[in-house]
Image 1 (cartoon, rainbow over the protein chains, first blue to last red):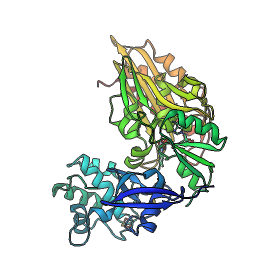
Image 2: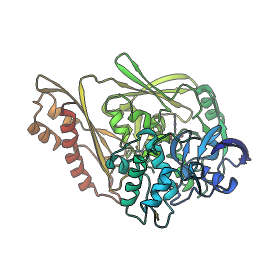
Image 3: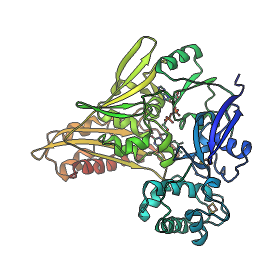
Image 4: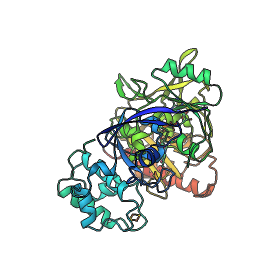
Length: 163
Length: 280
Ligand SMILES: Cc1cc2nc3c(=O)[nH]c(=O)nc-3n(C[C@H](O)[C@H](O)[C@H](O)COP(=O)(O)OP(=O)(O)OC[C@H]3O[C@@H](n4cnc5c(N)ncnc54)[C@H](O)[C@@H]3O)c2cc1C
Ligand code: FES
Ligand code: FES
């Protein structure tokens, strides 16, 4: 049974061809096969959003998607958003506004927020909270996370994310 | 968590999906968005031997107005339905889980899964909608009232695929969906869907359906009968909503016992009817 399947993914603009078991989750393909460990596994039960990445531009929970389901897709992870020296405005804002403590939820929070801002460049506070329904933080109490998203929006973070 | 092993097959047409279901035997399952099936497989509550991925079948993710009805492809994600003009279903879809789940979960998967706590089944039932299924003998249309047969069971045969959902356009109706849950992205403890048409100050048509009040979604027939023909007033709505739990059989669970669910049904029914009567 099973065997392996070839999957073609464009991750953060780079094309990859992977041999995976059908049961390989996308999050494990990203972390373990491609070494992109910025995407975290929190709950592993589709609730916490720590594993959020963009699949063809949509925010999704990569712990609940098989790598084979992503065949031919473009994936953006937190590494693709920006890194040291060229932080994305959202990354910058989370830093400035203390939108993180332990940082475990942060990549997912930022990817979910980036998807929101791509659709709605100037959300209200209520819209930000609603858009982060699927992301849990056990440290910050959300206050500074919401503040960071709003200040990033003000700084013009709403430009579409390249994938 | 890792699922049990399975064979994976991608299909690109409805005919291929049906053939694959027939060849795959009892343990083969269709995979749409995977947001009900994959979590169950990770918990090893489900272990299909073969997954038939229908997500790439062209032409099944879209919403089309066809005369007096809406035709919604089975692969339409909740996010697309939430942003559409399909009365009642748009506001119901917007309450499902969170944006990430709404980007992946599909209406076909939601109905075929047959979970009475899911939101779209009661909404499709309230509108007297139907589903179009394809099997080895061709196509058949199943009324929503005959579709949900028991807890996680539907009228679909093991080798049938749900391809389309049809609901009447409901022009001139007002809608309400009131969902009570304990955490932001959670499933409904109880929810109530309502569609009401008012003419000259009277409720000429009333549709009410209940989420998670039995092993299947239910119509609240007693409420509908009590309000039909009555004036569209707060008093008439409050009196009719008192009957929302009649004929229900809600299972007790970790969130609520049966009495509390009945109480929720009455309160949410009144709110849903009030929302349906509010000027658009
Ligand atoms: C964290 C979380 C929270 C959620 N909260 C809610 C909520 O509040 N309300 C709610 O309603 N739902 C909720 N869901 C479920 C979500 O809406 C699912 O996506 C949906 O119920 C199933 O759709 P799917 O496309 O993902 O189906 P899949 O998981 O792919 O399939 C589900 C079942 O249906 C079968 N199937 C799928 N498509 C077809 C078809 N076309 N024909 C025949 N059989 C088919 C599959 O074989 C499988 O048995 C939640 C899910 C998660 C992960
Ligand atoms: S790890 Fe995916 S939602 Fe928590
Ligand atoms: S910063 Fe610790 S979980 Fe969010």
